[in-house]
Amino acid sequence: MTTTTTRQLCTFMLDDLYLGLEVKRVQEVLRWQEMTFVPLAADVIRGLINLRGQIVTAIDLRRRFGLPDLPPDRRSMNVVVRADDGPVSLLVDDIGDVMMVEDRWFERPPETVRGLTRELIRGTYKLKHRLLLELDIARVIDLSIRQEARP
Image (tube, rainbow, N blue to C red; front, side):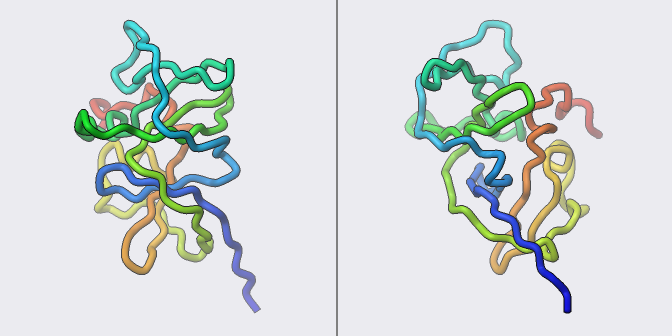
């Protein structure tokens, strides 16, 4: 008898991408937070947020994935993740649910996923009506991995 291992992923939307990451990597989810602009920072860094006295860098995932900014009338949500150097906020369009996925559904990124997106995900889960892309947090926050460096 085969044992099926399941994992919990926190899901969110980014344009038409359905993304997720391990729940145990998520510290908290917050609505829009005021940010302090950081001069000379990389374009994907939207600013710094004050999280109960802790200064947290906010990375705009739209910019990270090479997507256009949200329209001015919409505000991003914050998914605060635990990174090796402390918490980092990922700015996303909308928050989804916590989803149980089975390891047997997991596949390496398909050939149709190219460029920077391929570099920033661990792989995909084929769900009934869509693909769920699992983020590789370490690669997402490693700003040396850039769109220009990819063919």
